[in-house]
Image (cartoon, rainbow, N blue to C red; front, side):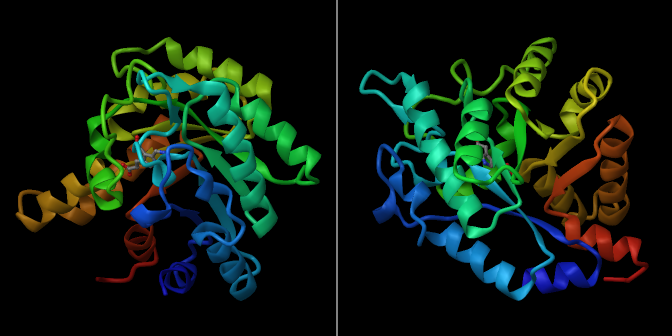
Length: 269
Ligand code: PBG
């Protein structure tokens, strides 16, 4: 199992992203807070087997949405912010109830960090942390992930409404102040490498730990380059991670976690 392999090389934190059967997807994504759904069941199973494992979860409706969006969509295409936040609170509490250590809202709805903090506290989960996707850009680097999950939006993009425009730089600071005041514990920037200066900007403007997410497109490009023998995959992988660290990331989410940890342990592939 991947988690046992990861722990063998010192990786003790994981993030769970579900692939949900189409039959369970609805416009309001109610499967997201089913206590017996895939994510809560997986958390319980993992905590049972590896009590010391640190489990991060994703809080967003897209894997459960028949529209492929992170939020509930009105007939005219408008994303319903507050109705979505209501669902996200239930989703986060269900994940905490199952044993999640850190819930990570990746949806970019307004006001969701404060609302989730309140819902967790009310349910007795004051100790559960929130890693907020503070600066999540509407990026084409998410392509392979959406392909794998079959979560491409059925219509419209995710920009203009909730994800940030890749041309915006200062807007990240507005999001930082909102997330800090709403009680976020960790701030995340996504994607990673093309947005290094956003990581640095946030590092220089917030005392909170910063996470960087090296996304599926970044990972795939390095992999493909390696397979085509155009680049030295291992060296480029380690350099890309080093650059995220240099920019100011305290935490890195990467599909290279195992490979990089093995490399750091001196193991040859
Ligand atoms: C959305 C979500 C996305 C990813 C994970 N969760 C982005 C999106 O589809 O808009 C992408 C991660 C990746 O590309 O590795 N909640």
